[in-house]
Image (cartoon, rainbow, N blue to C red):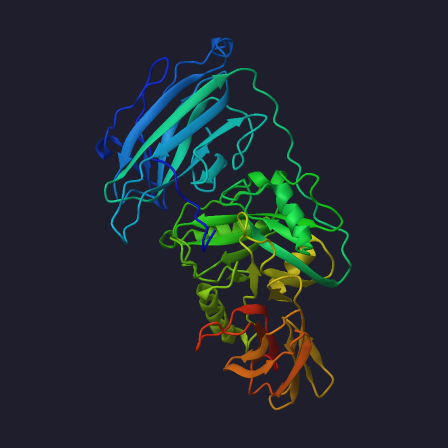
Length: 530
């Protein structure tokens, strides 16, 4: 989520009622709420909502169920998460939750109200625990859960008795406070059967060792996207992609929603956009059914734990749009745990230019040592029409079209980013001794050995090629009007510690660079030291 997209907007919580039908809870105020410190961000726990035991009579009455309504107001400065406990009695087979909140007019420059929502079952709300049952952020005003089905973003499964918690996230609160209403309806009946999840296979047919195109940051109806998985798969194929990654916000419900949509021509990876208050990270290519918690800030010193969880699940940690302009989008966790970084997110805009420059600035730390470096990638962050899928896309050199091979190629930096499948690059460096290195590799050469850097481009009419080093841009050449051509430049490892290529459109504003059409990860020059 970034740029024109917002992951928030929806409701507010407090207190409970009791009785037979709808009961309106009084606003008890903060004085009677319990303030819990979770070891990370503070969380409010409200008064428990209690229901009389549900009985089969509910079903006989058209299964309208038993309903409780809770109202209250959260003040500015509320904790990141507010939990509304709900006692679920035996015999319940469906939980339905609806919520709303006031959106008062606020002065220019002041944030208004935005409230996210989700739910945890009787196993609790512990960070990284097993109680998570779904999240829709601000994308929905209601949801349901049953054993056999659930609203997208939520996980079907048994409705067991015990204390469940509706999780509210007051993302921003207006000066007037955030007045909310939450309505919980319980229905009784046979428990139902939970279908076994079917996750995408880890291999597609592929072309052996080749360049494969993918988009690893896409949202569906399982979070704040407007497209179904079937629509996304069709658009991915139309965009010339070989692989995609499911990356809905703070939920894994979409992992099992791709049955029948993969094929020999399309590898589908399963992931999550972990959307914290201090930045977003794409957990790329994890085992199906893996959940990564997001309820912490950088000051809580928790991110390393969840980065390790992503990697244990076979995935990559990719900070997304690190200089995004939306609230909470700026990346504040550092890059020590990152396997790659998304420096181009959707349509190319100034925040991408800043992300590209910041990434380039940290490349120098790995130029003269064996220290790992952080490759760059680009993704569409597509949510809904007219957002295109595959603009941009990461093109990866992989041994085959498999999960392991694609992730290995991204991790190694054997990749470039292009605005569409029309753009193709070949980039590398060669020494006078006959050695050659491609994107993401190191060319072993003495400090003063002559090195020839060569870029071949197709599909970039009206563009200019740039060779960028640790000193900056040292060579620029206009491409032929057809958009297909080759550019060469000669240097030495002592003059350029690395070289990477950019292909840019003509500038629209004098004095500012043109938007990217493509860029590569670097080729490092010279032998390592230390």
